[in-house]
Every structure is written in C-alpha cells, then in structure tokens.
Length: 56
Image (cartoon, rainbow, N blue to C red; front, side, top):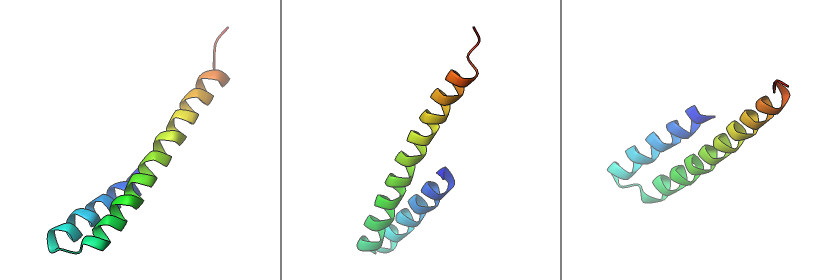
C-alpha cells in the first residue's frame, strides 16, 4: 500500500510540473489517504503482534 502512495505522489509531482493542477491535486489526495491507511494498518499490526506474542 505504501508503494501505491508513492506512485500517486510521483504522478502528482509530474502532473504539477506539466501544469495539470486538477490531476495533481487528485493524485496528492489519493496518495495522502493511502499513506494514512498504511500508517493505521501498520500500527494495528504492531500493537496486535505485541499483544499476541507477548511473553509472560
């Protein structure tokens, strides 16, 4: 998922360079959403792994 966020970010940079403002804004918002979803899933996996494999 982080790969998709980076891809959309690169698309946004290229679109901004060529002057396509609407496409760049859309790609940035998609990249931002994917990045935050990735961070939330990462934190959930981190907490879940810590609680499941916690040693007594």
